[in-house]
Length: 257
Image 1 (cartoon, rainbow, N blue to C red):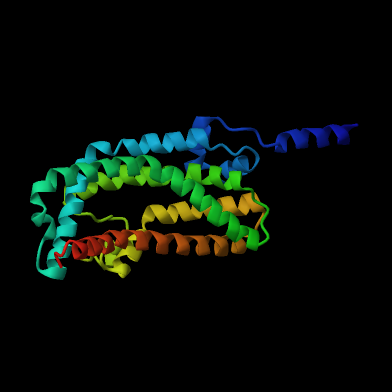
Image 2: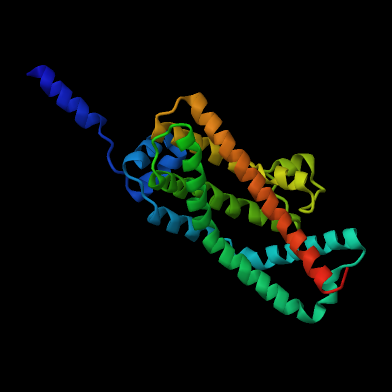
């Protein structure tokens, strides 16, 4: 009888209890393994994404200045490439350009995180299915909804620093160390800019999640996440350079080049 009671007690003790919202947020920083085990049993998405978007909205007071710095950076690139600041040729439309850029930044802040959450979950699911993992899409979507809190916090930390520096440069990135004078027209700069202290922390959390959700070994989880990290870094770097490519096409179409 005592053995049976002990077995029942152990089963109840080992059962994963659903975490509350604040416990989930706190566990991301102090008990990530326990959090990922909880996500496996109780994948929560909506409330965490709403929290992430709410955090990101706190950067809105800085968006006007960040937009201005971005336009200045693009003007400098165009001046260096073509000897002409083409944005100045559109001076009569500068107000509209600034307004459009600001609106785009605000909309981007709101929708970027849900898109990143669901897209990354899909790609990671494909990778782990190839590796014979048993994760479900909802589990990965929940994992990223939690992990993206780190990304939102990075925006709150880095954005004011950029404004203080007067430059679009993430001081926590490899670009700040190895190519501080680079710009988004350089693929190598974009790659280094995509690797930051915060993206590395996110990768570590994702590795823990992949291991706990799939029951992978540490080595298998690390290899899986390194593949995901490489794909994500290349994609982010490519998207950063798209703006310059788009401007080149626009200027050629307008006969400015």
